[in-house]
Length: 318
Image (cartoon, rainbow, N blue to C red; front, side):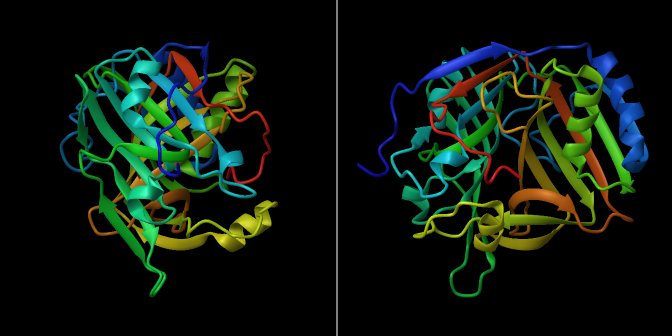
């Protein structure tokens, strides 16, 4: 039945390469300077992320840090597979993390929203109880504007695909990445990912966490309702999506991995929400001269692949 949660999905996992935070600081401080005029990367005690401006469900990014990828674009394209509905309450258990702090980017619970939607996962699962700060964004069919709403504690489902950073939400050491004025072509996350890839080569390094677009605006998309005709190319994807120029401050959550260790992973995926009614899938800032980013990230020790598609493709992964 449509909307029924998929129970006992397949799970594969692999260890990720975990360099020291100090080593990553050196790599990023050098590598990001080709893309941003001002770069400051350091190891710090994680600030309390429950407070403004981040307003996340837990204080920190520490304790059994994992990357979890659920489903994937093959369940959305060329035509949607509506049986692919998951409960994020289950993800911590699948990754052996309890309590579980889950943040990231995915497709929201269309059975709840009534339509296809974007999801900014942001919840804590403790003793089976959910503290849910997750947002979804959907397209207003009357004027194509963005509708952003927070999910209740009783709604912890997602659909089709998700890239989640999972931890126990504990305080601890994290990477602080501050960048201003973009001078290169890469978005904030791609610049980090490509720098890690160039340095660590075929060793898969995974990062997850949150960043704030402090100044400027960002190109973001929201999926409309599911397409009734097959979508087979990235050009057709872009014609289907609704694009917006969304204003700072934006709070983004998600994951990145420097290379795929053989699990058909999406290499980067961040969604952002705000407290002014905007949210969606992050692409890139659109005011490079004034843009300012502040990110806090932790290294994932393992990546868990949940319900990996057996028939795959590379469409719709930007």
